[in-house]
Image (tube, rainbow, N blue to C red):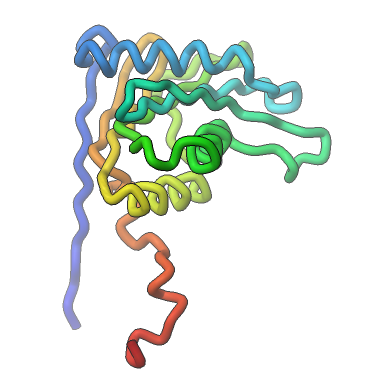
Amino acid sequence: MTEHEIKIAFKEYNTLQELSTPDYSLCHEAIKAMENSHSPYSKFRVGVALKLQSGKIIYGSNQENVAYPSGLCAERVALFHWGANCPDDPIEAMAVTASTDEFEISQPVTCCGSCLQVMAEYEKKQNKPFEVILFCINGPAWVMNGVDSFLPFMFFENRLVNEAKV
Ligand SMILES: [Zn+2]
């Protein structure tokens, strides 16, 4: 038997002002993205901003639906927009935030497993890691370089083939 241990690494900044200028600006784009959140059921607004290599910003916000499973997380709204419209313009960074009038959010909101899987696949598709910034409007912010830190055992298409035969 061999015991293994996996460590993940991320940077924590107490306030958004401590971030680099481009990261700070991208956080503000994510805050802006929350304005279009359609969240009448959870009353929990999530905003995402993707910064592409060209400088273009793609916005995403959670889109709920009265038929609950029909809704989609903010992360995938932004990522699928990218995949459908600008897949040749690599993602450099992604900022994610959330707010609600119901209670105070004091820790950055982390992405759900389905969104992480999509992030991982697009990162692999563009063959380049992108920075992920998870943050609260008044801090703190957590910054990860690449999706590996979130999902070390991610599922990839090579698992769909019998590797012994390849
Ligand atoms: Zn999600």
